[in-house]
Image 1 (cartoon, rainbow, N blue to C red):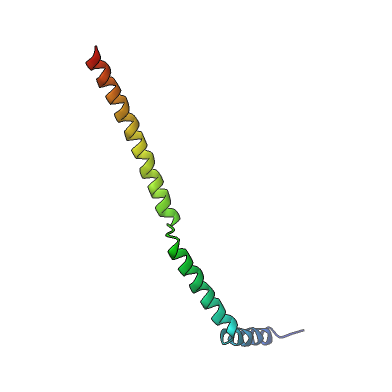
Image 2 (image 1 turned 60 degrees about the horizontal axis):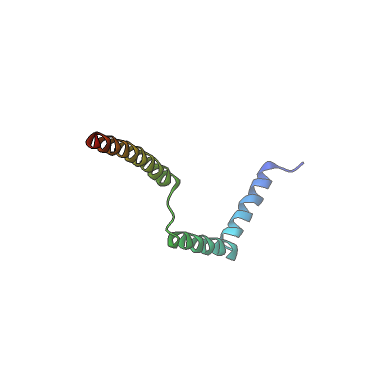
Length: 79
C-alpha cells in the first residue's frame, strides 16, 4: 500500500510545478481580462441591485399614495 506521506509529497511537487508553469500565468491573465471586461460593462453587485429594487418599490408606493391624494383633492375642489 502507498504511504500517505508519499502522496502528499507528490501533490506538493505537482502544485509547485503548476505554480511556476505558463498555466498559472494564463490563469492570471484570463482573470485580469475578465475583470476588465466586467468593469467596462458597468455591472452592479447583487446587494446594490436589491437595495435599489427596495428603493424603487417604496417610491412607487409613495407615488400611488400621492396620486390618490391629488385625485381626492381634485374631487373635493370640483364639488
